[in-house]
Length: 219
Image (cartoon, rainbow, N blue to C red; front, side, top):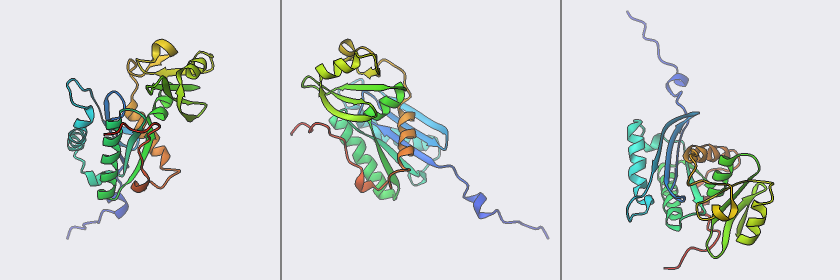
């Protein structure tokens, strides 16, 4: 009689940690599926009509999961951008992340746009994004400074102390590079930073909040 050896439980369950990360706060939609150190899918969606690119978030996530034979319940960690950025985009990705984490009983972490761009630019970053009202959302010296008057931001940007990353609107004033013109893997950076944050927080979906440095428009 043939000796059928059982596959050890540890071998049967030896699957990589899967992370689903997405961002609709910035100028494009970024969606990434990562398993351990391997990027399984990385997709960028640009909006070419009247719709917000966040309108394509659910269908894009479904497409990525399907292409990798991955079910939503196979995801171990959900990561999203919490802002600042498009108010509609912030609401969209934080809501989707919270609902998925709640329904699937998964952990979730949020990362700021400013932290993502600071990681992209590297050493001594200064991140400044247009906040309207003659101000910029500012990150420098390792922390988010809030919405700061452009005059103060310009002085810091031109001090020579920082590597400046900004957007197309503020680049003529501040110099540096625009994240909208560069080719940074922002989705992959988001996934990596979100995973790191899980070492310091519990990943409870109740605690995921949008980062509104300024209040969203009424109505």
